[in-house]
Amino acid sequence: MRLLFINPVVYVRQAHRARGAAIIAAPIVAMAAFGAILAGAFPVSAAHDAALGMALFACLGAIIGPFTGGNEVEWTRHLETLVRTERDRLLAILNTMEEGVAIIGPDYKIRFMNPSMVREFGEGVGSYCYKHLHGFDEPCDEMCKLPEVIRGSTERSEYDFPDGRIYDVVSSPFADSDRVPSMLSTFRNITRQKQVELELVKLNQLKSELLSNVSHELRSPLTSIKGIISSLLQEDIGWDNESRKMLLIGMSEETDRLASLVTNLLSMSKLDAGVWGPERERCSIPEIVTETLERQRWVSKNHTFETEFAPDLPEVFADSNQIKQVLVNLLENAAAYSEEGTRIVVKAKRMNNEVEVTVSDQGVGIPPQELEKIFDKFYRGTQKRRRPGGTGLGLAICKAIVLAHGGRIWAESENGRGSTFYFTLPLVQS
Ligand code: ADP
Image (cartoon, rainbow, N blue to C red; front, side, top):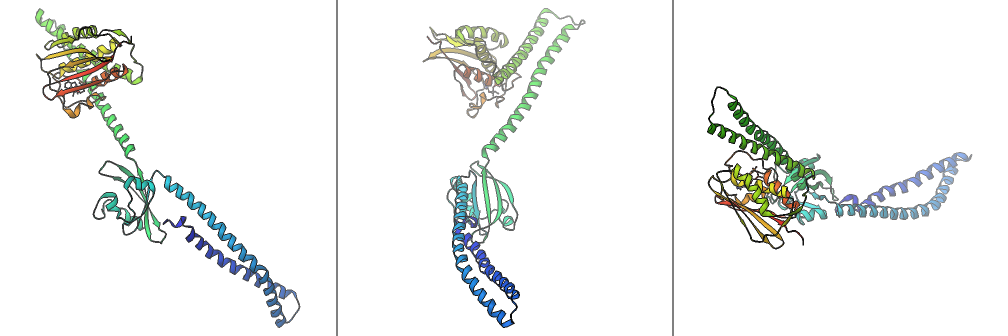
């Protein structure tokens, strides 16, 4: 062990030297003082004084000598036990520490690594720190704090490694057991903490994006509706029936857009608060799909909607209102990301103990690298919507609802040729 403060031999030797000097000096001084007092107490000549003093020294020396010698051995043993206990305690701390500890010499060579450091970076005692830790061929002036630390300052820095790990490193000056001025560094792995911080920053960004998105999404249909109402109210314009109908249809579409946005926002906050658990009952998927399509055919008049249900499709155990919302979101997306005049097909079939529902479109498709992320809250892909709107909440809501039913949801897509969204629901237990 290189650490001076946990090396009992060195420590005891130092202590023993100091103690030895005191042990030898103390009786001599005490005896000299005692002799002088005694000599002064008797009315005798100077020669007699000297002789008497010498005799007294001899007697006292004979008494104290063996006594002090025995005490010294005991003292040394006691010190050794003390230091050994301290050393064992410090070793246990170093060995169990979660932080990595390393001592690096002025020649950049690693002199010591605790087990945690070895676990994180591999055994490297004797190697150059820049090579072993960073894979550099020479010290990196920008990153390395060794010269400053050897000169006496304590430095704190963050090391980013190419594999993504991030460490908070505190380096302080340290005299190694051979008295070579070195650097003692502790390495704390803060990768997870940094990830959480980054995620929080990202989430905050997404939230403010959502806020501005939602404000925009709320304002634009309201502006359209207000515009249409103002036009209809203009008394000097004589609207014919056809024009009036067109304006009213436009108003109805904008209201639908508004309603869908508000529904999604409400659903998301209820799901987040955990107060929107499914109220399950026996229900028929063809019925739910047919009802949902009635509304959707009206909203997306220029798409063709088709259905294909397997014969004898069993009932599912689900909350029909929530499943309708899943279908509305999938159908709205299918229409928003595909050209007018294309087909949107809803199918349902039994797969083991579940019913699998699919919604397919012939739209822009989804790039493969986005397929995993599209179900994340606030995630918005790179594809352009054919119609305005979108907050990145629709698919996150679908996922939360389907998972709450014990089902699964996923998507398959061919870029530029369309997408198919799948979700499953458990059958009614017989
Ligand atoms: P948004 O409000 O942006 O539509 P969603 O959560 O509904 O949010 O969808 C997330 C992302 O998934 C969209 O931004 C889009 O990139 C992609 N997406 C969803 N449905 C489709 C689809 N049918 N075709 C192509 N891309 C889609």
